[in-house]
Image (cartoon, one colour):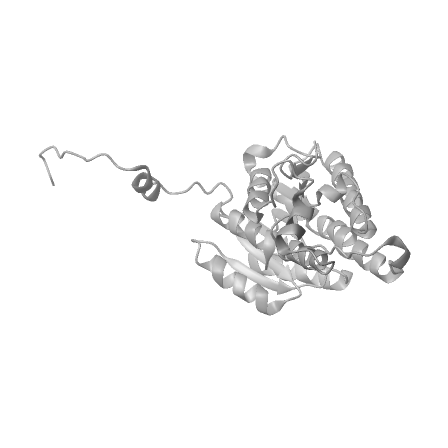
Length: 280
């Protein structure tokens, strides 16, 4: 044992951060994330994993799911599972939830992140495309919320977060199905939040603006087909953002993580824009 007093050199902020364990307020909680294999969903999975949650990722692309599972497994003492789920199919949803529960226990956190955004003028929008957009963006969220509600009630803790969009708060041309579905998703969020307000479950929506994801890159590529450069195409997407930029996935994930914290129990029924001031 050392008895002489040692002189300690002051630590830099970096070394102090490295020595201090990160808080893990969601340790032991099981989070199910749809579309958690890429983009915003992958960023949310990373955020919740860093907060200590055990993660189940569901999507149709099994190879991408496995890549993300491997990446998350390196982030600490958490469990990560994946299950293939087709959000257009109610049976696939039911089977995926049952498999997730069997694998990692009751579901305490549900992130309805997966979505589609077909672009077409109304006159050329096929009815099948309209129906599929609602199946994935709205019906799947309804079925998943319904499927995990009892888990959350039994646990005495539940967080449902629906990834909507600024398109759920205002209109955009040429994406009528997407805009209508995201308005519906926010309506579902508000109704369910009131229905569950006396219990331990909160229900919120996060509404990103144009975000640096595959969906935005596809939109940029479509705009470029009109003869614009990539910089000009990006300017088209960002001109409605007072900050003049695309949102980053980890900025959206940070808002989702905050809503999932135990300390956020008073936040429910909200549609929170992460959009650089585009919607106020």
